Image (cartoon, rainbow, N blue to C red; front, side):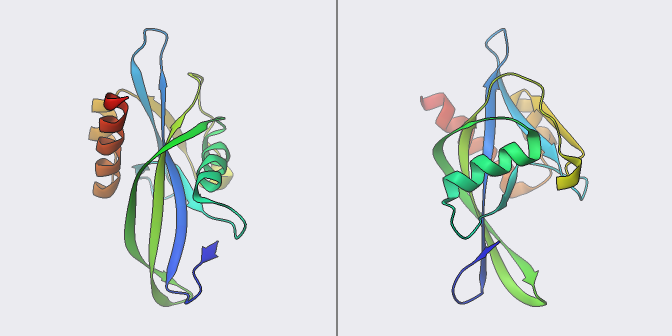
Length: 145
């Protein structure tokens, strides 16, 4: 995990993974994390990685899906405890296009399910408010392309 120089911020990256089904319908990918919550794939940056590279790697590790990282969607930040001390975790999210194939949730990564969903269903299912906002912004970006 990459921790900034003063040790007060953990830095992660993730993706709003999207595809189109055979009928041309936009679909978004959600994963069920180790806490049983539906969210987006994300994870820690390695010391030598850019946020783009980390997002690409984490999507593959958590879902088995090759992907093409695109536009920056947004950043979320929330408090965590790191080594028993208060810290802030920031996560940069990017659009990530993947082929329409079944994802493979990686149980060893704590991912119990991964599912393609219509946008309205993804927005209703996502467990965290900040992920809802990221999904909505990603949809706005996709609509403007």
